[in-house]
Image (cartoon, rainbow, N blue to C red; front, side, top):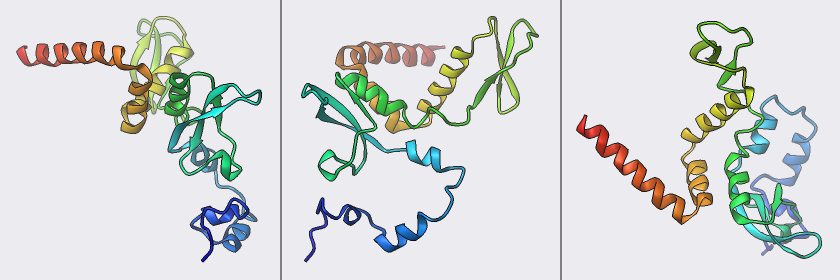
Length: 173
């Protein structure tokens, strides 16, 4: 019986037959390929830098150094690696929000898919980008959980208190 984790046969780690994948490689990539490449799921695993120092790699689920795969990112601290893993599926995607270039109604309009959602006093594309990233977090429980894990226990304890207070206060009003 063949070893399905045989590093000599990297195609053996794939559910698709090698012949099928070779044939498919001849096709042009669809426009969605870049998004599919970063979609994940991602996980953080202990690794090491080229000079042997401890590090944490961000890997696609199922990829490993021992299989000949390289991490998508390598970080000296686990919380930084968790942040990178959480945000990786979101960057480089079509934005939900875009900042208008012409000031009106007291600021620069923030559009979501063509509809005005608000106005920002200063033309600040970084702020609009941040809103886009956070919108993606609200749509991904996995990424949100990874972000919370990266925050650490003390931040979670404080956030839990704040959230509890806000929920209880909203029930009273």
